[in-house]
Amino acid sequence: MKNILILIVLILYSCNHSYKPVDPVPTERQKIWQEMEYYAFIHFNMNTFTNMEWGYGDESPSTFSPSELDTDQWARTIKESGMKGIIITAKHHDGFSLWPSKFTDHSVKNSPWKNGKGDLIKDLEKSCNKYNLKLGIYLSPWDRNHPEYGTQNYITYFRNQLTELLTNYGEIFEVWFDGANGGSGYYGGANEVRKVDKKTYYDWPNTHKIIRKLQPNAVIFSDAGLDVRWVGNEKGYASKTTWSNIYRDSLYGGMPDYYKFSSGQEFGTHFIPTETDVSIRPGWYYHPEEDDKVKSLDKLIDIYFNSIGLNSSLLLNIPVDKRGLIHENDAQRMLELNQFIKNTFKNNLIKKSNLFFNNKSHPINKIVDRDIDTFCPFKSNENNIIYISLDTEKLVDVFEISENINLGQRIKEFIFEIKVNEKWVTIEKGTTIGMKRLIKFKPTIIKELRFTIVDSKDTPLVSELGLYKSSK
Ligand code: FUL
Image (cartoon, rainbow, N blue to C red):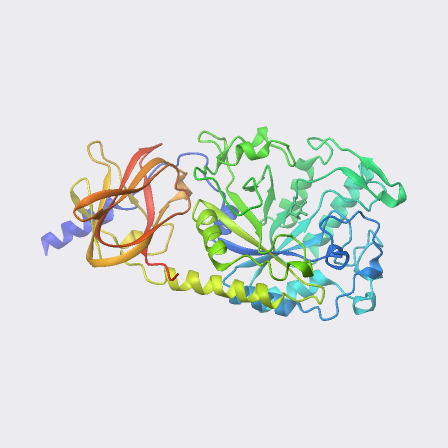
């Protein structure tokens, strides 16, 4: 009995006793967002009907005429695909608004859809509620339709529209601001080039205040955050080294060399994780000629491992078609990807292993419980190897590890090895971990593996470990 008590005390002590945060750490809203991992972008707007990617701003509202628009079909397909939310292009660069904004005539209210009585954002809000999905808003700062773009009056207009979107459509989980802005456009008939100073024109701090006031739980996305930042490319790949930390005040939306900072910065002052946005087709918008260009399942799996598996989230874009439906080809691929994810990660093969650290046995339960708030510290001066012996030999090809990022991102360098024919084989020498790192390797039968934390800012706090055999 006494021995059991000592064991329990040791177990409780060895995991989760309090550790000081290593700043910067995530805010509550970032934590909630980060656990979503995978959610959908929908590009559906005027461009869907003109077969363009960037409308000029002179399109007639009468062009917007979906024949079978059904936001329930979107939400149902997205839910069945395992995603947690939808971000919709409420207004893209051409300025057409998918809701009957009081502040412009360039909207659905002057379109044939539902005889001008429709409100697509309202429909989508209802569908999201019905299927238990979160709703996010893309509002383009650049507006090639608005006559006053480039002046202070446009900023007022932009904020008025933002206020409508954040007031009338329930809880919004993310507000998405694109970096592309300023250039040629219709601008109410002026047909000219308008350049703005991207650093100062939008007076972002005051716009952010509006968002915080109306939707305090929403994360704000742009190249520069405030809460979530761009991964730096539109291909679906995060950097192998991805610090959520970054010197936020040196960034601004639309900065030309932003991609240089996509890895984040080890000593960055703010915690701003990346979001990986990529389209399931070549274009962001629907083009019939791309019906047979939906990304293959293998490509999407690769993107999954290189976004969610590299301390990022995955924002997968679905271009809704001219009917107003998610096209059959896209829907099929989305469901296939979900099947892959579910089958691959349903069975954590590490669960019954023996874990040793610093040559002592260590309880594994807290790091296989899918709860990022429970973790084990792995700190030693002599031996920083986490050694795992599986209960039986197993065929595996995916390793997963997560840090307890609530106390700050810490791990700087690691080595992952498996034992094959009595020899240790290095699978990956890497750098950062963060929220999640997935390592994919050739399917191999193994019984032993080890993970060495070569360098870390402070005591490494591991919240999750996993080992799987992928289903494809
Ligand atoms: C880009 C935009 O210019 C594209 O049209 C698209 O909306 C993409 C998500 O962001 O920068």
